[in-house]
Image (tube, rainbow, N blue to C red; front, top):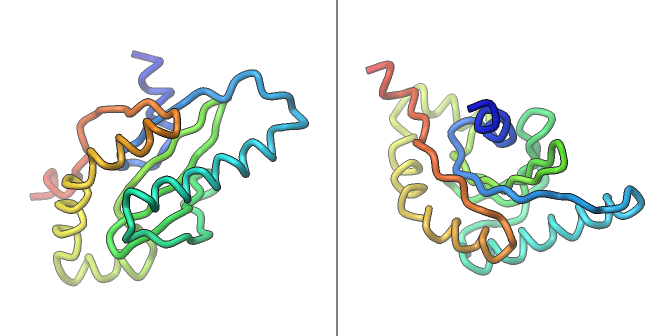
Length: 143
């Protein structure tokens, strides 16, 4: 149980993710390896999911957003010799304000559920193992 909690803390809450270890990389090669991983994610995810465009953003201090479309972000988080590629609903400030005034969240969640197999397949081709877990839906608890 402790292991699952540690792994789940790598990517943003509510995001679908896939992980892979980053072991055996000499310290001098860490940054070039990271840049290669970012480039591979951008190229390969866009090949399968053409609605995404490259973007340079952050979610907090650890989650780097690499690609964005009208509904979702695809990002990379590296922590403790592990890397997680993830896809999650957009959460930036203006999007959240729109969600407070109307139900903007419904279509993105349905779209994310429909695209999940494509994301898993693209992540596996990059060497990431998909993590299957129930999606956290706090909006159900509020109802």
